[in-house]
Length: 380
Image 1 (cartoon, rainbow, N blue to C red):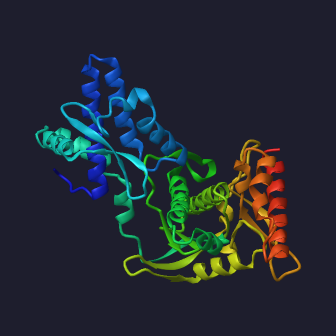
Image 2 (tube, rainbow, N blue to C red):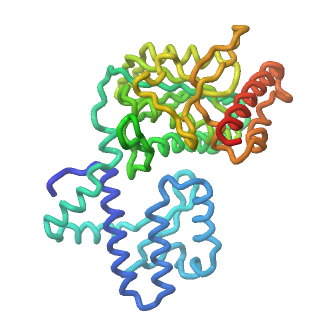
Image 3 (cartoon, rainbow, N blue to C red):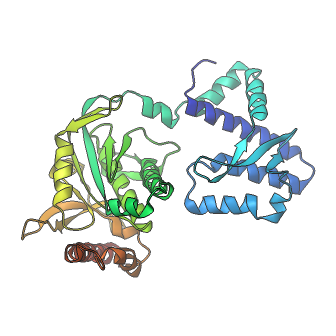
């Protein structure tokens, strides 16, 4: 092999070889139902990482309740070609997954080792831009970058209610991380004057996410225009994911010189201070941009009739000020199905039954006012 592979790249190469091998087997399969079963199981195995909750539930149904499939699973295993090679298992989170048995992995890699060197190199190049390579590529320790700080409101209550059962809370946090990662797969193409968003095959390597109890810290690799868009998309995605899972965020995004020493878990800089102070001052649920994070004047563009901005100017209510502060804020309400859906999603946060009912009722009122305005402007 001409290049070394990271563990994630190695796994991707194995999955690529599995897909190609299975494609040749099912093409020669004379029994069409058997070919379809093999194709379905391999497709599920290839796509199970990063599945949405709905996809996980459906996959679990297929391998535990769908009779045309489970009738051919021999005690949890299913023959793909020469032997039982796909097994129904539970992972460390208790989720149903399809595990590829070691003998078939060994056979795939042996076949790869016997392949023509040019073919080997071509396959390696397909996985050489893997996300892990991007993530392990050296970030400058001290660099101008965007910093997003997001507070999970009421997180202490969530943890206390769960007691010793930490699995649901961990699952919630993983959902938020996955939402940010999905946002990272959005890539900007075209010049500044005419940028469009497309879906990248892999994450960009420009984003890092860290969790500290009820705080989520999001860092970008640099202070480029694409990083500005990326951190806003990540904030938007996490806010919506949290809202749909019964929790809510408040956050802020700033930009400036930030030191991020991942090896020693040391993080400090003015943008972190700015984001923390701005997050704490807001009297609502939402995400505001510190003035340091505003897009430069030369990078702004006029919106067309069908364009919806990721962020928009809005008078943000503050805790210790009688006047609101005009800031850019993340435009999260536009992705709700309807204005009624927004009201339903926000209703649990109206403060009813809380010991801080008056404060939380005000937060709810301010948030609903923004959601209604955003919806009416861009979706109404």
